[in-house]
Length: 286
Image (cartoon, rainbow, N blue to C red; front, top):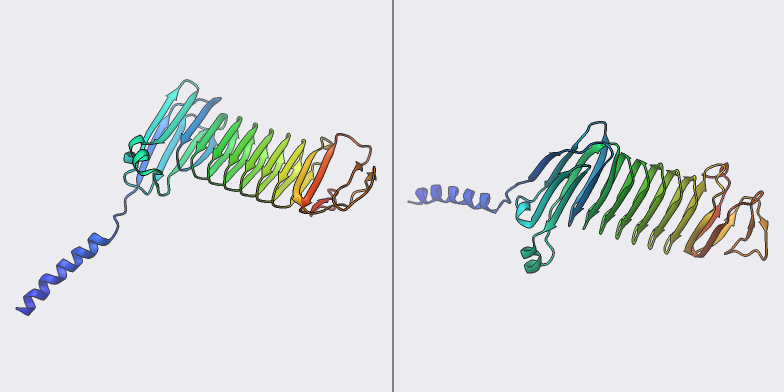
């Protein structure tokens, strides 16, 4: 009698363990949409990271993945193709948003390839953004993630409420702003405007005017040889020093330098309230 009860209890235990383990299920949505070179890609999503890369092929190839198996129950999804534009819209279902507030997702991610010559407009309610190898103006914004721009022929306008921004190889102007991260920009062909409320700023090889402003970090800017476009460099804390001969105009102090370099040119304004600013010649820069 005891032997029979033991044999019955073991299968029951195995079933209980199996029921306790979470089921592993993923969502994968794959789309091939018409998009000729010179067109536009627009992605507006309430959540998720977005990666867009340019290729030599025509058309937009979209892969949307998530570890949620009920993604379609949480979001309304639209994939639209029209002459010259692909538009992807992913919005939280109104009934869920009103009943439970924010809708949580796990690992939601867009991976998109488009023709190299494509204008992009990306917006997400929370996730990282990547734009790479594109020829066209780009606008990207996220409410909580990092942004990376790599090899863009065009102007870039990027903004995040809580992440770092990296931009390199931009053959146009750069406008970048973050409320809580660092900004690093290198090899930018035209004017640069970078602003952060809580991080450092590093600009390398600037070829145009530089406006850089941080409320909580240091600023490191180097200009390409021959660039005399000037700009404004500002931090809320520290000192200003230079190893470049400056023809001082007025009184010299630890927190301000006013004068001209070489034969002069457009104005470069440098100020600080509590972070160090060092002006170096290209030969002495680290």
